[in-house]
Length: 416
Picture 1 (cartoon, rainbow, N blue to C red):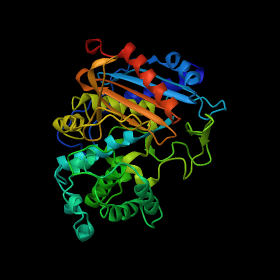
Picture 2: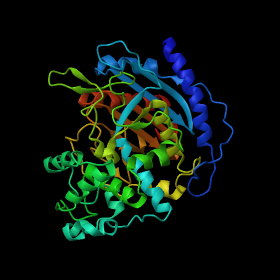
Picture 3: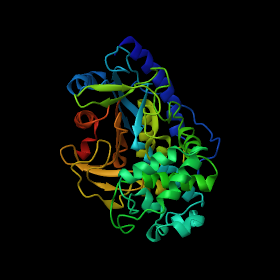
Picture 4: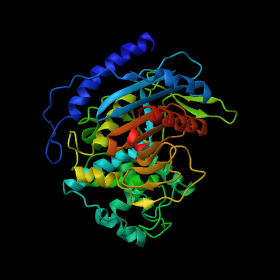
């Protein structure tokens, strides 16, 4: 590691010690607002992944790359290499924020699960129950779509298409706060016919998650962003986590997103309205955070209730990770979207026989300018996260190759 990286890693480990303290909490039922803190365990210095990551930059034309390994709730290896902006020498660190795209969906699902545990929602609550005033305009089949179907992409709402893109654009043009903008999207969405009978077929629908966000907003009186901050980021002490472009407007204080061009070059996207998905799409994928915090999120999930904070019941966590529907293979799936496997509630499941006969609880996320993977094996309390600040097929190939190398080195031998 470079000297700056070493200092960054030291800072990260001090942060990690605090995070591990939070992960060791044992509280009953849903998390209280101010949970008691356990004494911080002595954190081992994690191995550096930098030597493994470095060759991938040139091979896959990536500006920056970060990854981390967690086992039994501990950070065992971490690294970050490359630059915040292609063509410039602005080294990244393990504390830099990367965008995680649709990996945000699991956070939306977690907040929904909390509402279910608290009796504010049911898995089988229907869209018409939440928005009865829209019933006269609502598609008849959509009226009976449930929260569980929305979270598992089995609602019958189609995958993104031109009509839905237009709907998102219209929502972004509305006045008011984001919850009001999302409600405007919902008003238009409920009139549109479904592609299939609810509960029968998988279709990866970002608008389904916008609808879930609007349901949470209706039931709480708060925006989705407030809910995720209060119920996910704060209790897990994900201090680098936020929404929208990972870099601040006018600054290069985080790895800039990069959009692949037709000639193969990468265009750096300065923070602004085109630096991320439209904000109204937040529940489907606008979160960002550092590789350290992403690893903390992974470690908490691999525990499935074995370590605190107890944000939901252990059986609720297990339900979220359990597949509901099998996906038909999709050869032309965009990077960061499911190509095969199964899907649960905000999480997919994939089996990669060359790596492991045991499946991974998995999600990929991309706004086509960044890419992130999270791969978990709760059975072995193992997880790994991978992040880059470029979108496209080369970035996707790079993360797939890297995940194989990292699992070969750090994965559970009993599963290989």
